[in-house]
Length: 193
Image (tube, rainbow, N blue to C red; front, side):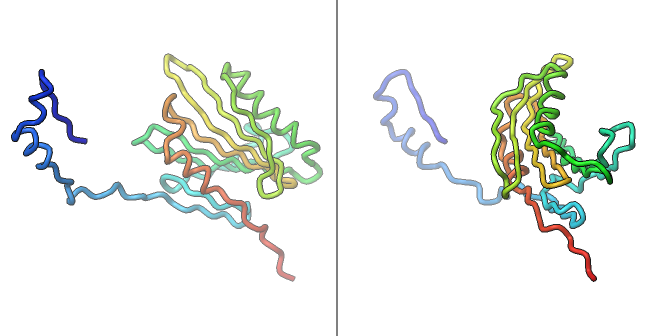
């Protein structure tokens, strides 16, 4: 944007102002910021998603997860945007079942409420014919305002929890929207007989 101003209206219509406005040219040498996001596909967990860099993968220990689940987390931090990205995949252990997707969704909301977060924009819907819920949460910790966007999906004996956490005001940045839009469920790997 180019702007010219003056004390009087007449000063805007001088040759100098016109020459100034016409002198504006775009810099053709500035390159767009490269998109270095990593496409992560896990055929065993039946998921495909983009992360800002190669995600760290952790299997949670027995005392770090609910009794009837085996959990794997995929995490990445984008330091340039101060944003934390997480995908948690929970599989029920042998002999356990998810009796109600509502219980799973309620547990996610309860976690944030117990941590004094303000939960809003709760939406329940079907994601590729699977029960799903999305929500936003805001919490103030140690003088900082954090905002989170989350998506929870139940798919048979497996659940997915996708979340992005950033500073308040950045929760609608294109990178965060792109992270959620990149998430895809892929067909389960079939046994070969």
